[in-house]
Image (cartoon, rainbow, N blue to C red; front, side, top):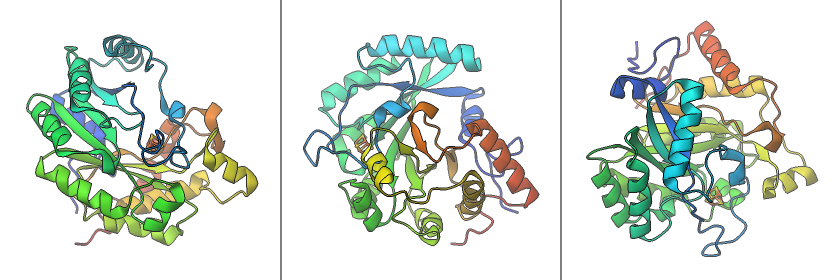
Length: 312
Ligand code: SF4
């Protein structure tokens, strides 16, 4: 049977939460920080419209506010998360926009400011594959000598036609180059993927599991496509509705997808959870927690495990 080191407490796949617990001896929570960045797909360098699905406001927690200093956001975030989850260790997560898009001096100042807080034990930096220069990677490697560092790349799809459809303004080759470059700096990299794009068939989506197994990734984040208000995707959806995953379809799809993944990959997410007020489709009555529990149950009942269908 496949060995899954972080598949504890009923999970049939490696769960990031247990990876962190194992590494730090206690629960660790990510804390979103707004670094006041933009992105080349918005500021005119590559385009102004942004990716078709993007509305950064839909994934900003209340304490993450670009008007506030980093130290204030950290203190408020810790206060909020401690009450909610009773945790003492945190990872500062630069999530919105492209968090490596700026002069190195600005990046270093922001990252180090976030790490100044004694309860912050790590840094997670989300970015685009075309925005990671060697000097940033060297900085992150330097920081990783004393802190947990996670570079999160918005890969989204491994199909050229989908990247074009999403208006990502980068190619699959750009992603491959970025991953090769990051691996030279021994960084722990997350690949972020969206499943359910109308530009892909279900077979193409499923086949992406096999393709991503060959990439130098330690973590993956899987999201189902959501149509979010105030996006180009919302306009498109209004003009001509396209099929989106139903709750049960996604649950069964993701379970099968997970069985095809390399057994050493660690899953940071299997579902997205934008605030209900922003979501146009799909609208599922169940919470994220309910989904995770239903997924566990479904995988358990069907004897499905991460890596079951993986072959080199
Ligand atoms: S998803 Fe990221 S890269 Fe795309 S427009 Fe939004 S911030 Fe920019």
